[in-house]
Image 1 (tube, rainbow, N blue to C red):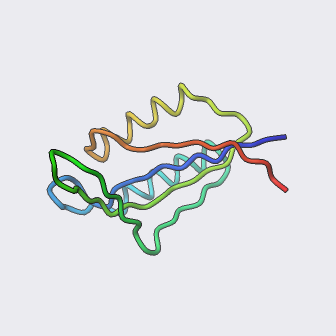
Image 2: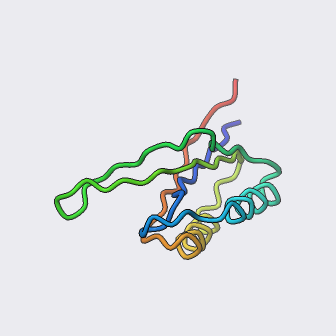
Length: 103
C-alpha cells in the first residue's frame, strides 16, 4: 500500500537574520511525533534555498523535517503550514508531499 512522505522546509533565521530559538524546532518535532508517531529532522548541515525576488537572488538556510503517513490530510497540512508561517514569521513555508511505495 502506498504511503506519503511529507517534508517541511523551515528557515533557520527570520527575515532580519535573527536565528530562531531551538525550542521552536523542538516544538515542531514534538507536534509531528505526537501526530504521526515519529519524524526525521535533517539538521546537521543546513540546506541552502535560493530564489529570485525583485531582480535579486534571495537566500535562506533551511532544515528539513519529514514524516511518513498512509493518509494525506491536505486540510490539516494547510492549517499546520499557516501555523508555521506565523510562528516562523514567513510569507510562505514549503510543505511538500510525495507518494512512495515501501519496498
